[in-house]
Length: 104
Image (cartoon, rainbow, N blue to C red; front, side, top):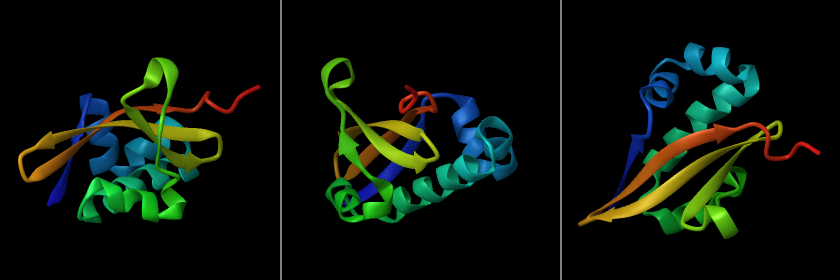
């Protein structure tokens, strides 16, 4: 199996392809982590392997976000993704970057 990463919006794809766009959008540390986390996801053989990478903080979401997963970006931010099967390929789609999740 393999993992293919898709992006819900052109902006999310651009931020991955051009790290300066990610840094401009979310700040230096979150922007850099966004690019690193996607590369980690692409390097994994299957979605189950993402649970074994503690720095990702990969976990399923509940309630109104059931069916979605979070990847920790640090600094009170997370990346929301969905997972689908595409035959022999698992497709991870980046839905959004949420910087408000951990605010009081």
